[in-house]
Image (cartoon, rainbow, N blue to C red; front, side, top):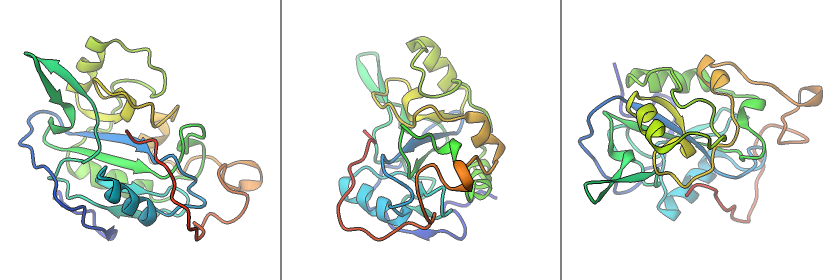
Length: 218
């Protein structure tokens, strides 16, 4: 049975959010925060996105496995996904589908998170699947920008998993050149030399810090 809140994860209430009566295939959209997962925790990045008014449903640190939820699955994300003009009106594609669940991965475009550990990914995919999000990636690998507008809309209409840059009308470039196959398989991902994360020279546990970190989420 689908649960509005992912079981066993921290909740940080995301404030007021839209509840659109979307129709059509369920979707999940993947983006990145633009920050080092060896330094920034999911909770810290979730609070920053909340402060900036760019809430996503989940924030996930793939090194520690920490997941924080800001919005119930029945709410619409605060972050802009993409819009296109229909009958002289702009349609926000984040309002389409039974659900459109947005996952912000603590990571950067330059270092695809699928190249490193993906701790906790199976549980995350299980929750997305409970909302009937098909375990498919219709638009192909993100980060290529080789798909035309009409093809992008057709892929979007099928539902499934998408990169932020693959939402029709999106101006985002995230999440970078990640591997859809590794995400959908629920595999743990790879590591750098000597089994250390590609992001960190030491522990995979996020360290304390003071300075704010800018986001690439548009």
